[in-house]
Amino acid sequence: MKFIDEAEIKVKAGNGGNGVAAFRREKFVPKGGPSGGDGGEGGSVYGVVDSRLNTLLNYRYTKLYKAESGGHGSGRDRFGKNGQDLVLKFPAGTLIFEKHSGRMLADLKEDGSRVLLALGGKGGLGNIRFKSSINRTPRQFTLGEEGITKDLRLELKVLADVGLLGFPNSGKSTYIRKVSAATPKVADYPFTTLSPNLGVLDLNYFHGEIVIADVPGIIKNASSGAGMGLKFLKHIQRTRLLLHLVDVSTDNNSELHDYVKRFNYVVESIRKDVSIIEKELLNFDKRLSFKQRWIVFNKIDLLPTKTKIKLKKMFLDIYDQPVYFISGVTGEGIDMLSDDIASWFRAEGFQNELSE
Image 1 (cartoon, one colour):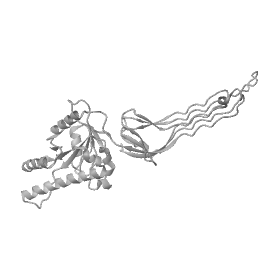
Image 2: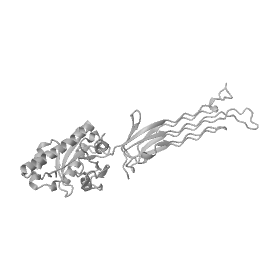
Image 3: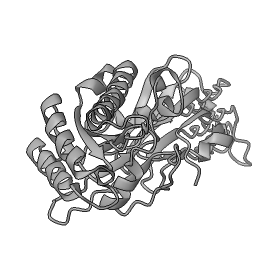
Image 4: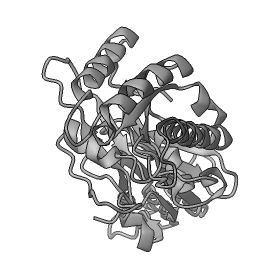
């Protein structure tokens, strides 16, 4: 299924039915009096969360959604039928904004959450409503009110506990395949991940589910629109923990034959990669720079043992935040990282409801 995380639609609530002015005209009933009924209420438009959905694809092509209008009143004291409400289903994590004002109407997180998007019009009054002791033959009636119309902008932000970020081919998809039942595409070329993938961390001993989101790779200037980073960076805004995956197999400068120079080149390349991602996060949303972020150096199976040992010692001293060394292919370091993720969530007080 194609992943669509943005859409614009128009919703229109049903109009209220008109009231009517009518009088009883029955044999043997002189001066029957007013008998015009009220119009029915217009149907409203509601939005609800459906956990079976994970994309806004349904709203990419159909743009107008209308609820049913109320029926008109009629004689013999008959009221118009109320219009049927329209219920639109959205995936969990959908934000609904008024298009022109930008005001957020709803943040739909939990399955079954319901929000009123457009209120149906009230039905008009029939002339039986105007009968009084001094007005026995009223001819007044009112028209039904028009239903509310709104232009809406929909934005989907996936709900996950842990967000994976890093450059293309840093091993995010391989990692999520290793620790969950998710099966994102893996290949030896960049941008194999074209939409977010969700997986549940495989921890039999942990009470509750820890959901991991793998988003497409970020490149330099992603916060300014380069590549796909800007489009998908928003999906890590809701996460509570970020795993910053870094490819340490950058020893590709064949011109450097001296080991020390080669090692220093690798170190500088890795530090530069980390710095670029940190800058993009800060430029996109300053709050992301304060979010808990662990640096995970991946593909250590491709490094010589001597280089691996030196890198571990160096980077543990360089960075203040937690640092891990793993191989998404061989599984080295994966269990330790998973255990620490579970321990961190347990210490933080795991809740099914995610932080803003």
